Image 1 (cartoon, rainbow, N blue to C red):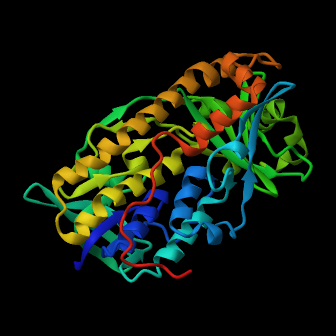
Image 2 (cartoon, rainbow, N blue to C red):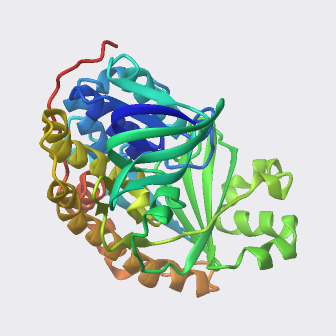
Image 3 (spheres, one colour):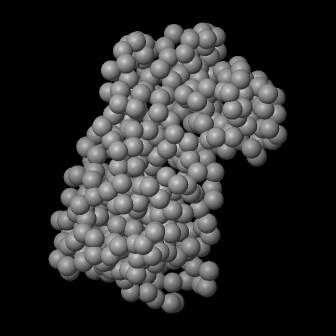
Length: 410
């Protein structure tokens, strides 16, 4: 079996993994990132780059180049409850260098980070390389075993970072215990063409027991159809025509292009999970992002929370790792730093499931009554800005304090 020696091995080339890989390599740490796929081209992943992430890109000197990639700006967000439209967030007044949500396909975001990281001499990205097991020696994680394009390989590392998503192999092999908080919903993802005159700030659509989230992707809508947990077989059994009618019941202006949903292959199921690890680390190993805490799609915060984890991880660990002074106690500090914001966001998501989504799914009204707090927010512009700040910047936002021993040239 081929073997590689490195200082840091990051498993997973998603937002948390790529940001961690970039930051550790930037700090002069020899870093290998493993990504099991051959590219980043997978649809229906988190596309909402919040002001908190744009702030991090600004601190890294990458924001201007990043925003040259094709994207849409969401400065205000609203929802339709039957015929009633309510404004629920206004990002234009928040304290940030980039007061908007950048709607960009996740593959563009990951490609950008990968391109920047590859310019760092300490960085290595191995595509088509899937971690299959952990290397454990004397109770300590000493790296991973992986299957690569040329066969099996061992990557031995002083620090292994698990960032391989909600179905994490690293988490499974680590033996770390998971606290399952639960979610009463699943979602279908699909896309339909967008007419230029259609409203830009319409995000949430509810009517007649249906909920559809519509994300403006320029020439198409990326749509999320919310369903009750484990309700997918029943919906599929009713047929594709019934599904298309159900969608336009909630979003009539999708009707001209609804036939683009030509088969169930065009509709992807995301099983929603809300959970978190009780411990995020073992000697030699730390977990971040969805591997440490799976989030609901509510609020589109998952990608941004994962990136915050990566920044905190690099802030706390890259300097000691580069200096050869990293301890097991340092690894626990990542959880201590990130647990509170994770709990807050998951609590808010659970309340949104309970107080907003579930009642709306059970309601058969074509003109459902918005929850009181949404009506209050819509009536008060200053609350729209406060809500936007909470969603866009989060609680305990991270800032880049990790060392910069190496600089990428864009």
